Length: 500
Ligand SMILES: *Cc1c(COP(=O)(O)O)cnc(C)c1O
Ligand SMILES: [Zn+2]
Image (cartoon, rainbow, N blue to C red; front, side, top):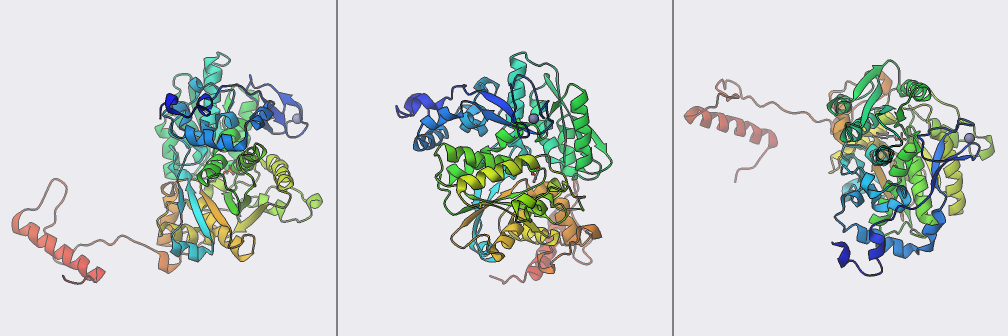
């Protein structure tokens, strides 16, 4: 729809103005810092930061219902900068001019309701939100679009030049960072640091294909994170991990989209999020809080964070019911099929603690919960979901395993509807599916296949049939007819087909 065709009361709001007054705010000492510089931790006390709009209250002057209409109409515009996460510009990056927005097709991923068979198995009505349908096939593109739009803005304002963007990754951050940085050639180059042999071949191919410098080091993600932290403290590089608060802002779009897709009715909704470095759950909490404070949603949905038993520091922290006695202890991770969440010392833990408090206080009750799941259950559920029309990654399977736990333990009730985050595309983690089908999981994973879920290709080469086609050597005439008949007869036999 063209701007002139919008209703009079909406038209002035379709193209967002860049106003707002963003500052970094320290979660430790509360100090605030301007955004002209890239900052990741408080220069004073070294704690993590969140971006805060000092003029946020101006957004409350527009009634929630009007915001709903603005977003619904904005959905109809053809302006590229407003097609992705910046549909919610005022909430995500109000200081970023549309001319600096980097849009590669991220956001607005489909919400797919599970079929009745799968809902029956899980015990509750639920949807997958397929964040694997982002450009680099994971939700990380939401935060990367935000971080790189901001850097693009700094470049255009000549506040920085020749940026080297750097990140540690369990696979998907580097894929996303390399993709977005490559779009901003020649101003931005990227380097990624990965734990050797701890990312899937697909994830490794992504930053290589985007032309990033790729470094593999011994250890796990937490070790890579220490290396990039050290680099970003000593050298002039732009850190793209979710320690970078711009990443969090962009990932808030996930909550805004869920709200919009349910017509802003968050009654009886339970949102399941897998937790690794805890950037995603931070963003989801913050997003719903902002929509709640501006009256765009009337209730805060229930949030359920899910972790594997093999990487469960956040679950452990909250398993102590007495808030005063809680103490954060990093864990040594064990092998996990939810590989992108295999993190023992999440950088965003202070943000989570802060936001869970705020969220529960605003909700007037305990409204954020944490569950842990078995590796076995993650794989069983992922494969079961995908046998019912989904494209869930292992982390999507983790969410579904978490839903099953939440149903059994009474954390959710039958009147609720769940939304599960399939954070990446199934294809990125097809190696785990293969190990499941071939029963070749190394013992550390503690996964054995359920026989009824195993699937293999069957090679059809009828006995004694020696004339078969090959590339560049087609069969013709009677040989070809014999080939087609023998092969189709054998397939019909295996499938037990009835003659017509
Ligand atoms: C990064 C990632 C996660 C974990 O998200 P955090 O923000 O680190 O908690 C989960 N799933 C996938 C596919 C990821 O790439
Ligand atoms: Zn501080």
